[in-house]
Amino acid sequence: MIKSKCVIAAILLSTTLTGAAQPAAGFFQLEGQAPKLFANRDYEKLNALYQEISAIQERDKNGEARLEKFFQTFADNSFNHGMPPSTDLVAVGIDWVSTYPDSVAAAVYLGRVTGNAVRRIIHLDRTKPGATENWAIQEGMINKALVQLERVRTQGATDAMWHATYLTLISLNGATSQRKLRAYSDALAKIPNPASDFFQSATNALDLRETKAFPELREMAALAAAKTSVREGMSMYAVVYITAIQSTYDLKVAPFGRNGANWPIMDTALSDLYQRYPSQDTQNLHPILACLAKDKARTAQLLLKLPADKVQDIWASWPGARQLYERCKGWALGPFKPTPTPQPGQEDDKLAMR
Image 1 (cartoon, helix red, strand yellow):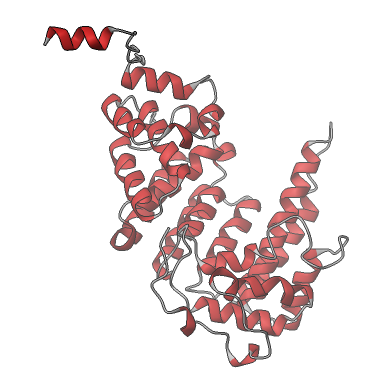
Image 2: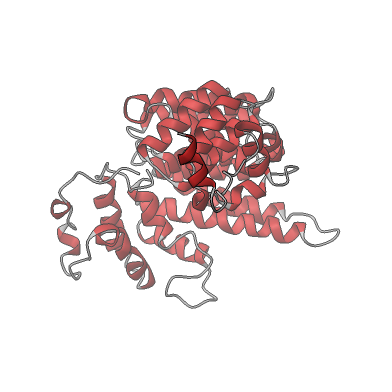
């Protein structure tokens, strides 16, 4: 995605972090310091690091915000990042917000690990025959995290991570699709430069597998494109729908049906996405969707740009479509006809006929 045009040397830690060793270039210059600070429960420096990264508008090469990377380094994986395996990360989040009640970073961290923990509870309950979800425990956890987010709402007003976490928690707490859409619209009015990870979080918060909130999804995609068109073209429309398609069976089998995306818009959006953030995922997904949209000419054009060694397993993952790549290729380009290998003496015969 976007390659940084900023002078990296200008992006240094604040004076509260001057005691840290000089970080390596690139990603680990800032975000990579978070796990060590977290393992030491150095909340003061984590807060300072969060503020430092908040001031950076440049995205990583995948178009993701730097703050998203900050949390990914120590909040979103299954291990406990230098702490004992038995550590209760929600309890750590509560400790952080208790120590720094006005910290946006602490509130967002608590919200994210709470969301992870609640999803695990839901999953475990569903794997137990006859079990029901423990609503009281879940609601108590979610409400505690929401109270802390509300406490720093003013400080987090323009913070995409605050809004993404809020959307996730109200979704887990049973908010209606319309309420989620209102929260999303409110966020877009305040966030100056939302990145792809915000739109992915917002789309996932719709919980389409359960809600079938396809009208809200269409509006969400349209708002995403309108908010970011100057910088991103139509690419965030693609991000919203790709997220929905990959997580929702109904959309995956019929991405351009009555509930799906508009193919001409999606075609432009995928082109904009690849132009800004070229990846093999997009390079493969574009012809897949062109084929499913029954746009033969566009499918052929895109397949001709897809080298055989770049064809990914995503083709085989499509439900009800065995050997989708071969089917789309045969339909769009016709059966492959190898050039006959000249037999000995044939070349001489051709020369003699000239």
